[in-house]
Image: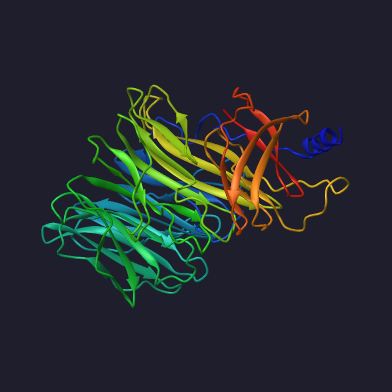
Amino acid sequence: MKRCALILVLLAMATPALAVWLPPVRLTDGPNQNINPFLSMQDYERPNYDDICLVWQRSRTGGWDIYSRMTNGLDTLWASPVLVSSLADSNLTPAVANYGQRRYCVWVNCHGDSQNVLCSRWTGSAWGPPVYLTQDTFPDVSPTVWCHRTADTTWVAWASFRNGRWDLYSRFYNGTSWSPEIPVVENLGNNRSPRLFKLPGVYSPPQYLSLVWQSDAYGNSDILLSRYQGGAWSAPIRVTTGPQSDIQPSPVRGFIQQSLQYRVTLDWASDSLGNYEVWGTSTDSLISRERLTSHSAVDNEPSAVDFFIIVNQPLLNHPLLTAWTSDRDGNRNIYAEYLYSLDAVDTSSADDLHPQTAAVARLAGYLTLRFWVVWQSSRDGNWNLYGSSKLLVWQAVEENKASLPVDKQRLAIYPTPYRPGAPLLLSLPRTGLEVVLHFYDLKGGLVSRQVAGRKASGLYQATWDGRDAQGNPLPSGLYFLRAEGAPALYRMILLR
């Protein structure tokens, strides 16, 4: 009876959100064409409260313009569209990076026969005048941009067609002026689709700033990587090898604690199995590659994010959320994987392309995350942008001091909501004893018992099939978990 009363008290205190994707919302209006979305989040080393910035290109008579929209923190409402650039002719393929109020948007302006890279800075209420980062006769395309987390330093890289091939170049802004052009790779095949990012958990760029791209330098399309060290870019490192085609490199972004040395930090698409699948690896290529999708359809255009509470040891060698395009429904739709669980984000009868992911977090006793996926869809007879989000909660423990000893150490369970068969991670008091987990329903009845094993560090991993002691599947809903010997209950949502 006391146990039941305790659980009811905890239930009254709990308002967890279910991890379901909200119905897609249209973020642009026709009849103009709206394509090539790019979604930016801040690469914080700690949970944050800040904005997500979306940029895209929008058609007009005689060309294209660049627009942006922003959403604040955990909100689902988007601010009104803001014009970034309406220069003559066409403005294409935008990318954006932000840190606090420092936001930089880059794109390609096509004027006559020239294709140049431009950059505009957010002034607090509008985008400032564009700065030409290239002004030459070469086609300069595919710009990528990255912001330093503390210093007012911004990097831009792009592909340029010179001497009959595509080479990569870069420039950086030091808060006052732009640097001269810095070569990344020259005279080594054709190099396209560059993406700037920093290594996970490393606080001191620029020496850990990285650039990844696809290249045909070795006879087929491979993923290459370079790091900015000592005032220059390092010789390219081959992330992938073999006869397959590896394309569309996409760095995993988000909060990753500094000691997590071996997380998957890079996704791409590969046809090594006869059709395109999404793969991932750590950027140093020393860790075994991981296949993130497994289907006979074409799965490509990956985008992934990560957010984890600080712990002393790695949790999983896996992105927290990965979205991609798949043609398994007879047309191209958006799918996502959250911690090994497959979600259909959008399965309309139209084509859905170019998914972009981002996330924001709020830490207040427990970690609340909102994930966004934005993509372009042809469902309206023209191309518009759509977005969907889900709210996830990494629950901290609730304690009842009247019936349980007070535990000063913060306890955590992850993930919640929980899907049967996924890894279940717990941070427990460091007893070094074998841990037995007891699962209770809302009536206080024991429905299952699992052994998590022994580990002195306090981080445990178990798997629960979501069944009771007799092997019957339990319904979705709220359950409670107690670790044998631990002075607290966890609450968790089982989601089927």
